[in-house]
Image 1 (cartoon, rainbow, N blue to C red):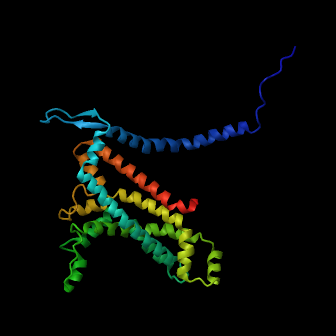
Image 2: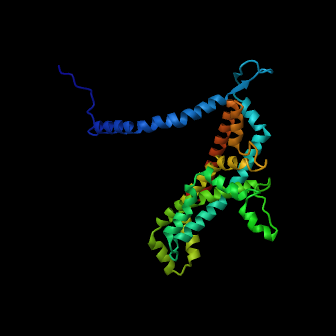
Image 3: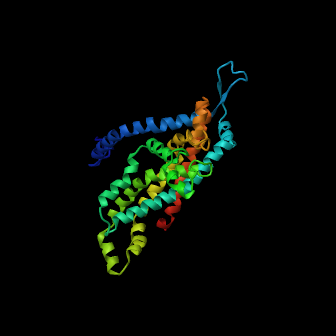
Length: 309
């Protein structure tokens, strides 16, 4: 009596697919390890530390201890007027500075991309050069231009009886915005300009044959076709705004008190770190990261609403 085999025949491609899967996993392993070690682990540790509260005795004679209280640091941060003020200041900064910078970047990219433009390479290079200057160096350079005692700008305006208080309380935020705009406009311009180069020439030629002016081609054809690049630079700028630190930190020493130690959320977290209150600093960092994530996702949703239809 013979027994029929119940084993199913293996598909011809199953072995090949398994080998490809192992190869893909092997190639991805270094990235996964680095991503987990350099990104997920610090993020997870920050969240973990934010769940504890630092407790000190009144006299400070004993070492501080940590107590598990998951909401205490977050409630303290949202009730901290200094931290909330720094969040509002950076939000106002982003609402004004990001559109101005991206408007300049788009305008410069369109000008360099125009057929009548001359010396395109020179203008691309000179527009990009400020980005090559480190942020700290740029802030130091602008601190000399803003200084109340050595500002050449105010020296030139002095005969006209004009003095611009670059570091005054009402203007220092926009002086910082000017430095950021100076440094990043060229970087964003290069991204948008690269997107402009991908527009098929036939479309532009057809528009010209139809009698469209240069302005109409730019507004109705070029800008809509580079919209993904503009959205990308906008998201980068939103994230960069949340990381505002170098420029105000450098200007703080010459601001005469207009820039305090908690001018931005990161500077406020640094103050908590200097006081060795790491759980509170971690909570402020987590709040900032969550807000940036919400803003970025909301911006993506709003800007992609039309394209999804």
